[in-house]
Length: 212
Length: 212
DNA sequence: CCGCCGGTCAACCGATCGGCTGATCGCCGC
DNA sequence: GCGGCGATCAGCCGATCGGTTGACCGGCGG
Image 1 (tube, helix red, strand yellow):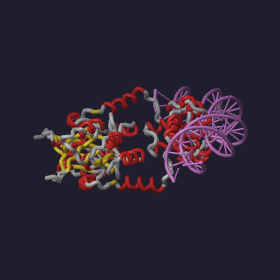
Image 2 (tube, protein in one colour):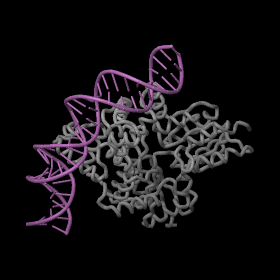
Image 3 (cartoon, chains in turn red, cyan, yellow, blue):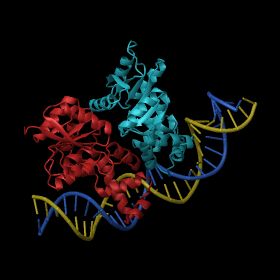
Image 4 (cartoon, rainbow over the protein chains, first blue to last red):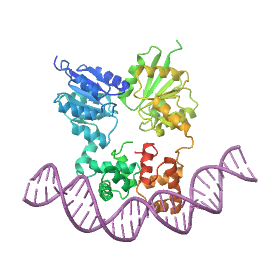
């Protein structure tokens, strides 16, 4: 019958893939048509036009090619499958890019089995499904639209500062003036609501702007 | 037969529990005798003396009671089962306490299925099994014995600095002199191999000394 | 018993930072 | 076409930091 939902599992952990396969295979209306260990494998699998996929269960942090890039590629190529993100992390740095890239839903891995099954069916219908923690983050974004969100240039500066660069060194490395570095830093302080570089670095780590 | 290894799965993610159950059930010499969603549940299950467990597959970061405390409790109560840590994280902050607490092995969740099975059997025999990344961290510890390991006082200072305190503020908060703060910071810089507070904060986050 | 280590404190110096004001330029959207 | 924003740059100031040297004390272990 045409009501069978065809699912592709993308996760770099074999154990997790097995777990998902097990959970999904318990539902008569779902069938796992493939697995992939990273974004590139997933794209390759999805390119096989003779074997369509309805819903992609996608991890985010993977080697070779992460989930966000994979989703972006999918959208760019105009492919059809819904993408349901399933990951451990609920930081802004993970959630926002994934949703911007075009994920249909975003679940955390502590989601109970039955909720996961419902989410796959909902994603198949094009409905948005979010874990409560993720929903909260999104609301926070909407409520404070202009907050945080460092510009890419500011992030470069902050990375150098976190690496121990003085203003002078950062300026040299970015081929700009020391005054500009100072300006960027002032903006960064304002956005992160701090007053010095040390706490700016700390705030950035907490918000997932800097990678651990 | 007595050669059947009895395994308890402890992980807060239902999907992961399913995956592990699936992998283990594929081996004729292994049997999953229970599951738990956090350390407290695991201890309760292990307290049932009429139903022994040989190997515990233990996640670390869990709600209610984490894996490290659970392992420590187990050892304190003189219980027998081997504990094989199976987690996503390989930072010093996770690895070292777990091994100190008495874990028999430490695997990351990207471990292939067959290696996981071999590891369970090895743990049952009391052999140490480490994922390559974890082994590397341990070696690093041994090679540089005096490295890092901030004293508790130094950590207090660093936390304040990360929160945006100036030396003067930190001094006031800890009821000590500003000069002492400076001395602590110099020691911190030496241990973390940096030259300013911003990069000290960064290094601390990367090593898991400061919590995200 | 003596040495080492962690914690405490002091004084001094140059280097750097944070705060402020003000300015130019290019791009995007209304 | 105007306004806003990001990025660029300048100069000035006081405050703070980083580096150094030297010192005292208490506990722990050889």
